[in-house]
Image (cartoon, rainbow, N blue to C red; front, side):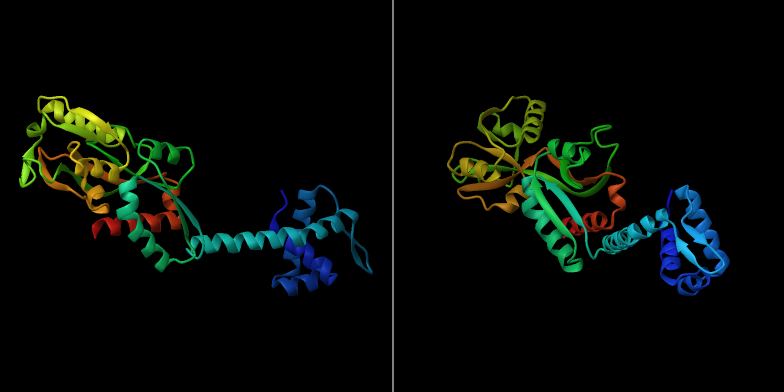
Length: 296
């Protein structure tokens, strides 16, 4: 294998015309230059220099190697500088996937702080609900996935680095004129006879489980992944809903009231990444800013 340090020595020898002059240019000893040249010729499998009592000149193979050396060494220098920039957060890219209510609440503050602290780091954002977002992470299509789950699921994320961010409590949403609109809290069973408006598939499944644990199966007349649509339907008097607090924070409900729901329904909000990605400076900095945003 031809090493970059050997190419630097060869180029110096070709430029200066001797081992001693090359040694002075490189800041090493003449025996060290001779040793490096022997190692390079061994790697190349052919002589690179012709030495006589009067001169030293390159063989045809040596000329070819010197001709390529400049481009190789220039490319290596550029690569080293780029890697150093990424490691020092002067450059870098992070691909973030988030569920919608996280995109509108946690992500903006985190990315604004990241940009202020590390303006050379670029972050892209696309939206996807778990488990799709987690699949994108495992498939290499993103670097960080903002996700949630209801209760710990054994083994679900064992292969990932999990950064807990916050616990998000779900709250009830009823129309302004609803009989429970002024209640400070309601039992989920008090809504057994209502028409329900459900959110994303994972949230919908959790709603059904909670209601069935309270002795009834909710009549879901409308289902949508769009939280503003859920709030609009409730505000129009078409039913009731249970939404994450983050979702209610991101959209001001019109014609609807929020009420606490008992028993408490909570989801864990986390940032996920792969173990190797967690050591990338730009990814680690983004995770830190998401944690700070969640704590505010």
